[in-house]
Length: 209
Image 1 (tube, rainbow, N blue to C red):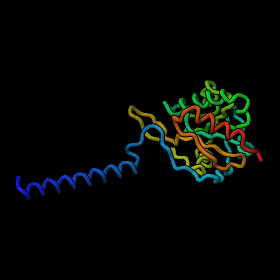
Image 2: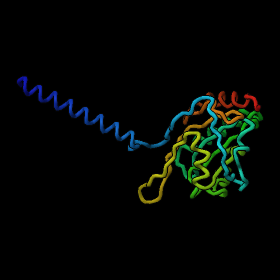
Image 3: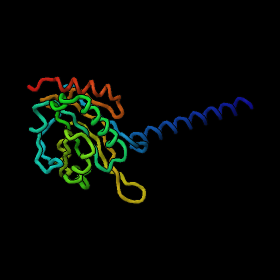
Image 4: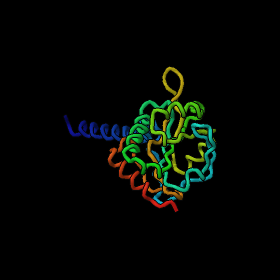
């Protein structure tokens, strides 16, 4: 192999590598490789994230920002047809709340649907019956849900599935808020239960005023 052939091979390899990197970058930015939990952007510590909103819970009772403020809260967004992330998170949360015992009563714990078309109050009631009763499910119209989700920077989007129907990609982070609705931390999807227990325990000890 002479030097000119070697140079051609090197140039071809470099061009191919650049093309692959550009495609991968575009694919990630456009969400081609998104599957499972979608992290979303993390809010700034201390940012006040609770804006005015109106939703209903699994009992059909009206819920507003006043029901979230006034005590520390843990907020998770998901949907009842979620195949893995939501039931796993809620099962782990249930175990953590039970380990906390009565200290968990100091927290507001909310599961907010990002699939209002299917998640009625009755659907939420049936779904959440398998988990800790202190978890309060919330739903509403798309605009009402957006009013709660947007200040927290929550990502969610419907995507079609093979054979018809749809699923919802969404942020899998659990948001931890103080009694004034300020962001004080988070629990990542799949985070160790002992770590989650420590975070929720600390949250329960934060002042309410």
